[in-house]
Amino acid sequence: MNVLVIGAGGREHALAWKIKQSPNCNELFIAPGNAGTATVGANLNIGVNDFEELGQQVLDKKIDLVIVGPEEPLVKGIRNYFASKEELKNILMVGPDEVGAQLEGSKDFSKAFMVRNNIPTAGSLTVTADSLAEGIKFLSKVKAPYVLKADGLAAGKGVIITEDIKEAEHALKEMLAGQFGAASSKVLIEEYLHGIELSVFVLTDGKSYMTLPEAKDYKRIGEGDTGPNTGGMGAVSPVSFADENFMKKVDDKVIKPTVNGLQADGIDFIGFLFIGLMNVNGEPFVIEYNVRMGDPETEVVMPRIKSDMLSHLAAAAKRELAQETLEIKPETATTVVAVAEGYPGSYEKGRKMIGLNNAFKGIVFHAGTAHQGDQIVTNGGRVIASTGLGTDIQSALDQSYENLQSIQWDGMNYRKDIGQDLLSL
Ligand code: AMP
Ligand code: GLY
Image 1: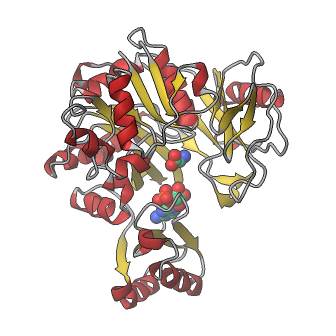
Image 2: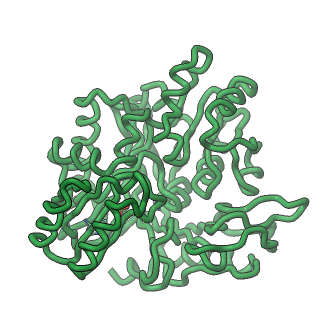
C-alpha cells in the first residue's frame, strides 16, 4: 500500500515511523514533513491546506491511503474535497469530513453534542455580542476560577482561565469584540473542573472503534506547570490513574455515547477522536474533543502499539475496523519536547543542530526541523520530541533525557520535570 501522511510535526514523524514498520507499507510520503520524516519516507513539498496539489500528488504517486495529521485541513474540508472529485473519491482517508471536524472546530457545536448525548462535561453558556448581558449574569452565578473559550480554532490560545471576575468580564468583552477574530464571535463560559487531566485516543470507522493507549500531556512552558500554554512540552503513557475501573467509565460514559451520538446525528466519522478528559474524583468529564491525534501524545502512543497500525488505519478507512485487534506493549513511554529559545513567544528558525545522528536509545522524533544543505536546522517552536521506553516512568525518562544531552542547538530548552507528578501519585 502507498501511504501519504499530511503534516509536518512530531505527530506526523511518529505516525510515519510506525506506519513504515508495517509489512504492507510500500511507498510512504509525508507532506510537507520535516528532516525526521525524510528518514522514514519521502517528503513532498506541499502545504497541508493545498488540497488541489495534494490530490494531484495522490494520483501521480498512486497513493492508496491518506492520513490527515493536523486539524486545519479537516476543518477546511479535505475529506469533502476528495469526495467531490471523481478521480479522488475512492481514495482511502483517515480523517472526518467538515461536519465531523466541527467537534474540534467549534466548541459550541461540541458542547451541544455532549449535552444532547448525556456525555459528562462542564456546565456552560454560549454567548455572542448580542447576549453579553446574559454572559455577565452567568459569570456572577458560577464559582471562580472562570473559564472562557473562543468557539473556533485559535491556535491553542483561545482558552482564558482567571480567578478574578472583573478580569473575566473584561476578557469576555475583548473576545466578543474580536480578540481571536471570527473564532471568538461566540464564547463559551464554562464551569471550572477540578481534577487531573488525561488524553484518550480512539480510532473509529463510525461504527466500531478501538481505544489506543491513553497519555498525559504537559502543556505549560515552565516546570511545575507554570508560564504560558504551549502545544505540549512532554507526554507519558500509560497514565497510572487511568486504571481499568476508570477506563471502563470512560468507555461507558464517554466513548460509546460519542460514537453512538455521531451515528445518531448522521455524522460519518472516520478518523481519530482525541478526548481531553478531566478525572474529577474518579469520574471522567470531557474538556474537549479533537478530531486528530495529539502532539506530543502521538510520540508516546505509537511506540506503545505492538500491532500493525497501518492495518488498523486502512481498516478504519474501509469501515472494516471491527475485524482488527489492537495489541499494546506493556512498556511505559515518555517524551520530552525540546523547543526553540523564546517559544511559545516569538523565536528564530534556522539554528544549526548537532548530535541528531547519534545512536539513541528510544526514538528522537523531529517536530520542527528542516534540511539546509547537508545541515539539519531548527524550523519551528517545538523542535524535537525525545521518546524513551522502559519498564517504568523513571527508566523511560532516563532514556528521554539521555538522548537530549547529546543533541544541541543555540537556545535549546526543555522541561526537566516531565512525568514527576505521576511518580509521586
Ligand atoms: P482546551 O483548549 O479546551 O483544551 O483548554 C485548554 C486547557 O484549559 C485544558 O487543557 C485544561 O487544562 C484547561 N481547561 C479547559 N476547560 C476547563 C474547565 N472547564 N475546567 C478546568 N480546566 C479547563
Ligand atoms: N498536545 C495537545 C494537542 O495536541 O492538542
